[in-house]
Length: 199
Image 1 (cartoon, helix red, strand yellow):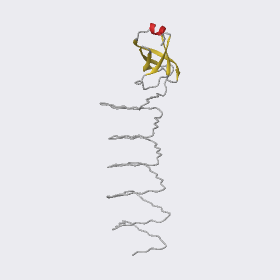
Image 2 (tube, helix red, strand yellow):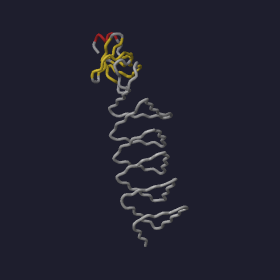
Image 3 (cartoon, helix red, strand yellow):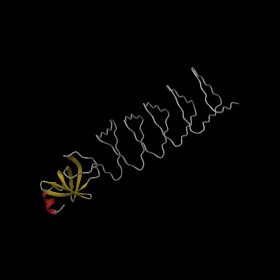
């Protein structure tokens, strides 16, 4: 701020203005015909755009944009924080609503949630490694298609399958190793094989 501007404005004050131009990290803001070069305050997370009505804090030689008061046109809100973003709601809820999509890109994400309700019509999950550790898992789905190159399943306790009908198609060999096996058939049982070895 030059001497002429500093003589027109108080030494420390709060005013508002309209963003006219953006050059790198410097914002040109106009207030009553006076152009001010301002920086975005650390606490102002939303990135200002040209045309935004913003709140300015003027302290000696420094001018900071502290908040965006009004944005005339609908646009994507861009939140920028160099050292990370932490959102905390002590007694309430945090709600994110988007009409189109929510995109998240990160090298690493840690999510700790005690209860989750996930509703989606389409889910696409691409991952090299997935580790799921849970005490109780309940899944209710109309249709499931799983395609694996290799699958290993280890169950320490009881495993049970209940279905209306079941079909297994195995191109190679099928090996079962059990201590005890019980087969109960209410109707017809058919075994069709070229060779049966029973010992």
